[in-house]
Length: 456
Image 1: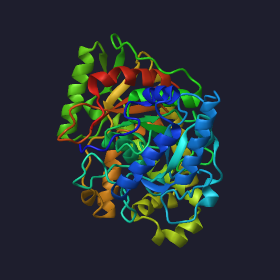
Image 2: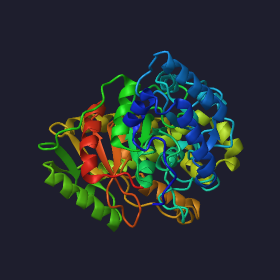
Image 3: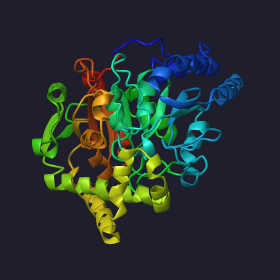
Image 4: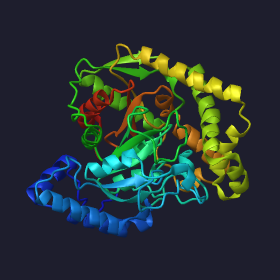
């Protein structure tokens, strides 16, 4: 990894909160520092599509004034945040990664962004996203530069790729993304950071461009599991997740038939991580799901129901009239919903409900599931964007391990493993039952010192 200039929050959110309240730093100073880093690094990394410099500085000054009179908004007060360009933010453009006018599909700023403001966050601007959040690679739209390799332009994945790059490069305190099939976890894993996918419905979805309303979730991208715990607690009103005691923890490990093939270097780091967990007292329990039949059913949901939902949001006329303006990878996805019959759509929605119920039953007696987040390491952009078919194949393969958590209605997190392969990040995914975010974050906090390190 290449070294970057000093990150104002490289000590984490807890350390920043302490320094802010002790007067060693101000919200204005840290915001100016991030804006300077963005000005320096974003021309190459292309993480941000819009930087709200004046608005951010006004917010920071207002927060400093509040602190000066003893008004404290909590642990995220003064933290500069980046927001995926799928979320409506007052005073900022929202494009959902598209050249089309989608204002009628998004609406005004929603409750989640309002919760960031009430927590005292400073919104720095909007980060790049795959068009419509539909996948992990575009062809006609720019791809942010994965900071794991500053010499070769490698893919950061998607769809929350700008948010992942912003966190990995130290261009924000933490970032906001959305996850419908791995769009937080996959880019987080490929960029060597932490990505939290919350349970469906934990946070409201108003003011967010919808990809698939029955599976869209808001997620957090952070530099560490500790930061994810602090941010999640502050934004939900929960207490910060404590570190789990790993001795006696039971984690399910999917068998070979439960996952499509992974690259050998990813498999090596995954197996090494399992050995470290076992040595720490974790009981690894073989599980036989998702079965091969369920893997095909999950593929069918993403090939039919998801594009049909997106097509409904866009409208058939807009798609037909502007398909030449849409990235061809997204066009191919959308075509999967064009001829979907109502009976088949209903069958797929019922199938999703059935699989979610089944997953809940299977989790009895398990604290979580552990597996690799992505079956590959970051590839050169030129190798995954040569054609629509190559890009589509990359999207399907790179999201093949993350989509089950959305269909099963579970919460999940990715944490980076230590000793990255040839300098390339590898992520380990932990998955827990619906509404078990505190357990999930507790496991991530405890496992991180054993298998994970921030790659610098």
